[in-house]
Length: 173
Image (cartoon, rainbow, N blue to C red; front, top):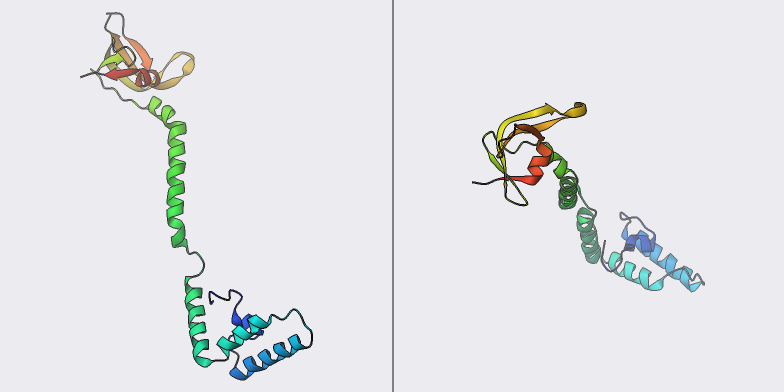
């Protein structure tokens, strides 16, 4: 629709877009007469503007062309939503990563047999990885990924949960 009249000139004259020139003129005259007889609800400026455009064939064609173009462009399509949806998906995945990454990383095996492990905080040697199991059974029937580590002190090898070692140990080259 025209920018200067969001309500539409056809609505102002109370006629259909397919109305003839005579119907437009008759509607204009009736509204003008209603205003003269005391009907204060009739907006004279609006009906004058509507008749000025719709009463002239060339201006009416331009107005109708503008209405058709604005109808084609109006209203969002699904293409307009793609950037918003992608942004929301990235935020959602980021929140999932923040919430579950420590748990996920704790269950992943990140050291190999033969790696020398060092404490992350002090950089002191812990020992060497002797064996890796993805489902080691600990006390009370708890199963989780685990490493069998041979301590540098020469003590017996022990099974340690992957979750704990991945968070507190590093491999130095």
